[in-house]
Image (tube, rainbow, N blue to C red; front, top):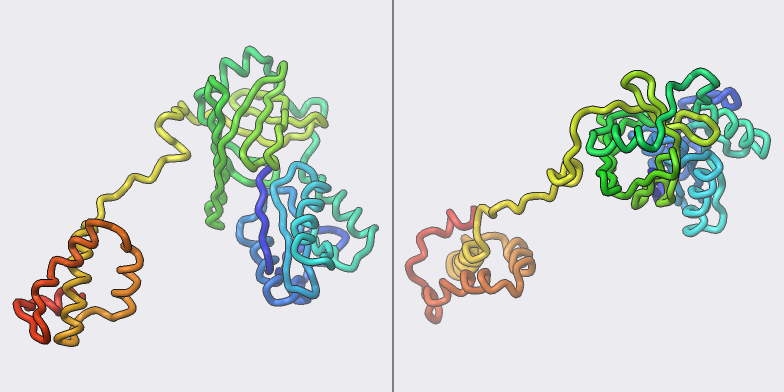
Length: 318
């Protein structure tokens, strides 16, 4: 499922009947962990389910989010924190701070958090789609919807079982995407991505009410809702467009010319580019044949301790 790990950082937002909200939550954490918890709480990493562990002695943390069960989110966050430090403690379940609360508080926080994945009830769903109906309606369509935790997504499935998905949280500038595969197990839609769903296959029933589709878990919980937003053409690279290789403003040969010219300006007139800049550029293009040819073009301009034909030092330096 969607997941991210963050090392070192904390601050807080709490929401539970078990814990009183306070602007001071997170202030008891070490400095880097406080920053990490601030990101965990407020910067768009809000794909449920999530959890936060930290190390009091080493100012390190482990974070998870986007898992399909609370227990798994807690386990993964603890696992990654434990890889860095031996004294990790559970600090938050979702947005509820549970530090120092003991077993009962953690249990209650988990129970409250699980309620976000709403049961559909007996009449809360539309018509369950059959294998044939799914094959007819879903492939080659853009799916636009929202996970139960509020994270928006776009997805596309191909008839040959490729799948792409992008999660977006525009207000918080969060965006993540992944590729994978889908298949049908009888009348269930099974999804497996590179790292979403923890890179494990997860299967759902698919229901439909008018134009709204619902992915529903085995426990009849509504995991996601979506609608068809138009044709999906994988070959266009809708989600995964390759960056076009832009034509550089200057060729490597020209850059070499400028560097060689500027070095001579510096040596004989003191008006070339900064030596550190020249060094960095030469390291960047080291071994490039075009750059080397351009670099040596002006070697003939210098002879012993004199130089001629150098009228553009100021232009090249800029």
